[in-house]
Image (cartoon, rainbow, N blue to C red; front, side, top):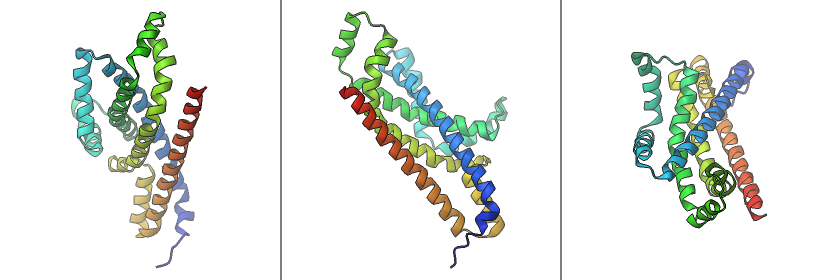
Length: 220
């Protein structure tokens, strides 16, 4: 079987647009997920029952159900209760809420790993809570959390392919449309695999660099 690269001259603009949308949704969804996960992880570490129970329910629901099912509920079920969201918004929020459940556990474990003596010493010097989080807890937590965060970012990146099911015109959606029109399957999906592999390797590299820099920062 010949590998027909001429297909990409015709469909190149569509694929590039799909790639751009994939990256945008991934970055936005991941950023929101990390932010929400940090807040939830911090709340869990506080140990207050009034906060812990609803947060635990949230985490267990989003970790215990497939992302595809969550997207279907949001996209097709939302209008039934008066919440009509476009495909792009559903994609971003879907990744954010799904990822936040995992990021929350990552940050919770990070907070739990800090020796209580450090917190007690900071309190004795009158350092406020958010100052303790920013200058004492966060730098140490990030060193421990960067590897699992990087791994979760890679998972979310690959999960963007699922968004094509709810008509988000990201890369997989455009590739699928290309195969339907040309009846060529090997070339489009081979290129799709290479693109995702390249993005995954780039994310892994950035994670390693971040881990080294944070480690160097703490060493000094």
